[in-house]
Structure formats: C-alpha cells, structure tokens
Length: 312
Length: 235
Image (cartoon, rainbow over all chains, first blue to last red):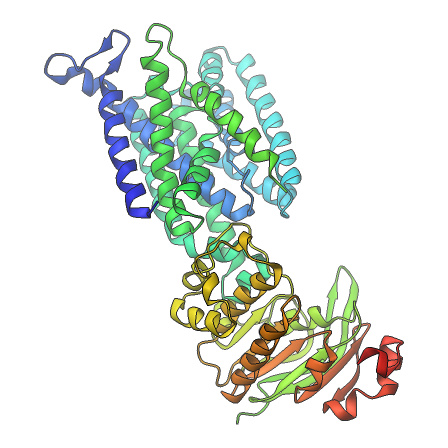
C-alpha cells in the first residue's frame, strides 16, 4: 500500500471512530439535545486521540532507538515509571499534586525519564532478551512501588489502581487534559524529524556515525521525547501496553520500514487503536464498560507472542 | 594530486584496556589505494574504525584535513565514506530505500547499476544473498562520498562474499574513486586484491610489520612470518 493511501484510509477511519466515540454512552447511542453529550464526551475522545498518537509514535521511536521490534514503552517499563512518578507525587504531597496543572505531568515525566535512563544503562545492546528482561524488572519495581504508595494513601488508592489498569479516560475533563494533550502533540511533532537518523541507526552505530549521524544526540533526543510522550499519555489514560507495539508493526506492514512514513503512520494508527479500544469497551458493554487498556491487551497480547516467536 | 589525505603517526587504539592497535603510522595521498592486510585479529577492522573516527585513539591522525576524533561526525562524513565488514540492518528495507536514507538516491542507483545490482532495487534486503546485501551497503558508502576529490574511502573487506564479477566491479569502483582524487584504504584478506593496490600495510597483533609497494612488501619472508604459511600457499 502506498503511504498516501494508508494515510487517507487511516484518517477516514479515525474520523468515523471519532463520530462513533462521541455518540457512545451508557444509555446507548446518541448525541443528546443540541449535541450536549458531544461536549461532555469530547475531552475523553480528545484524550484518547492524543494518548494513542503519543503511544504509537513513542513505540515506533523506541523500536528505532533500540533497533528492536519488541520495544514498547509499556513493556520496557517507561509507562510504569511514569505512573510511579505520579504515585510518588500523590504519596509525598497529595495536596500540592492538583494545585498546578503541570505537577502531575512533570512527575510522570520524571518517572518515565528515570526508567528510560535505567533501560539505556542496563537493557540496551541489541539483545531482545536483555531489553525485555530489564523492562520486566523495571515494570515489577515500579508496579510494586506504585502499589505500596497506593496502599498507604487512602485518598489516592482508587485513583492509582485505576491508573495501573489504564482506566483514567473516564475522568477526562478539559482542565485535566489540555496540558498532557499539548505535550503528546509536542513530543510527536519533535519526533518526526528524527526519522532519517533512526533509519541510519538501524544499520548499527558504526554505520550511522559513518554516514554522519550524531548517534548519542539522536538517542538522547528520541529517548527524552519518548519518555515525554509516555508520561503525557499516562496522565491521560494510565498504563496501556501493546498500543506502542501494535501501531509500528501495522505501520511497517502497510508502508515498509522507512521511519519518515512509520513515525507519522504509527501516530495515526495509535490514535485509531486506542480510540477504537475505548469506544469498543464502552459501546459493547455500556453498563459495565471495559477499560481501553483491557481491550487493547486482548488484541495486543497475542500479537506480542506472535512477534516474539520471530525475535532474535 | 593532493598529498597526505590520510596521515597517521604512532596511532594507538585501546579497547577494554587491551591494546588493539599500537604505534601504526601510515600516509595515503589522494589518488592512492592502500591495502591493509594481516591475519585474523591483526587489528585491520580496528584500524579502519579509528581512521573513520569511530574509536578514540592516541597518536596523531588526520583524515581529509581533520582529526576525526575531534571534529563532529557530520563534518567527518562530508569527506570520508566508510563501509563496515558485516553491514546489518534492524529493519527489512527495500534496496531502493537505502539511496533515500543516505541522501543521494540518484548517485546510489548509479552505484547499484555499476555493482550489477540494478535489478535488485525493488527487492527487500532479506531477499538478497549476503554478497548482494554487502553490495547494496557498498553502494550506500560510495554514494555518501559525492565529491571524491580530497576525500577518504575506508572499506572493510569490500570484496568478501561477492562473486567474481562483483569483486571486479568493486575494484573498478575503488580505482575510479582514487582516480578522482580520493585516498582509499581497504582492509582485506585477499592478497591478490591487495597486490593490485598502490601500497600495502601488513599488520600483526596490532603492530605494523611492513609497509610499502606490494612487490617489496609482500615478500615470502613477511608472509611466512605473519601468516605462518609459505608464499605459494597464501597466493
């Protein structure tokens, strides 16, 4: 499929999904009198779009940096780090957490950056096993830390538990979402220009530097922006695995591996997948909706196993 | 013809506290082809990586006017091309994608044709043989040195895994770069390939054993000392 056709088809599908998502509610389909329900649902739809976009492009960038098709901020512990950062803030200073709009995203970014740094220190080197085992360790550590804090802070317990299950989209309001949405878009826009460097990096460090690529700078930039994307997405939806894995794989299957196409298409597909998962979770079981993370895991987990079978 | 495009004096490289290259000096002018030969583990690849600015070194080094370990890699890449011994790719690109990635699709396509790989342009890298993949990466390296005059071409085992006709095509490409004014340094195990170069450097255990014109350098005594084999066997 050509890139133009893929983008056109993806944009059309996304538009249909947005319309569908805006019309789905606990009482079934409908937009309310004068579209009042649209206004109520639009922050949630916007949050799912932005988070999906960040998850998709973040996954593609992380796979490019680590030269590994199984890299995904959810599996490598970066989302866990972001949620742990939020948990630390809520645990240490629950009152101050909501006083400033940027406190929560900043805490998430700090956590995501911390786990990214540990991932680079301990998990890079090309081996899938090393990367995923490091991610496993980071996920276990940050999940344990988040649970300890949640269990000791009565007010935040439900909030953090919902975050760990990727179930924060339901509490989306304009006040809570505008900054993370802006950060998702910023991370995505700044990741696009790294496309050629990520292509060069795919030939190994020596070859990339041989062709004039500042490997260290590109790595730092991509890891920083992936952490930002993961942190902003976590603020919107909580922890969601597999979107960052699924979107780049679909993108590469559609348009080939060039990052100039894969990065933007992964963003588009990430938005489609997360919004689709959220809409399906709400639309198919309106009385007891499933979280977007649960629906995406149902699709993503078998795909992960399928991809892992062919991993080096 | 320019003088001393590649100048190394007492070059040394240490990796993990192990001295891989020790006190190697070489000089390659524009228009010259230099073969670096030696047994496995002699330090040929490390020497080429150091010349390309990919490893920290001690001693003096200038490649196309710069010390590659000091100037940024983008400046380095303007005047030198490097192709690794075993190029790899994390993703299964189409052969034609590589031209856009290297930034000169027209030049890359021309080199693909010269290396008899023009009909592979639409195929994926995974569909190529090892030799064809090496050829595609060589075409990338050649295309990246758009202006050969005053530049350096550093190739690690360029002819390995290639069939005879492509080996000859690669040799002709190297000669063309040299004739256009580039200094070419080629690490190789192929002594007949090395004998057709202007100069030969013989390395063993990271040290320079002999250097000079092929006839006076690759003597039976040197071959016996370095490879532990008779000259006729090696030839």
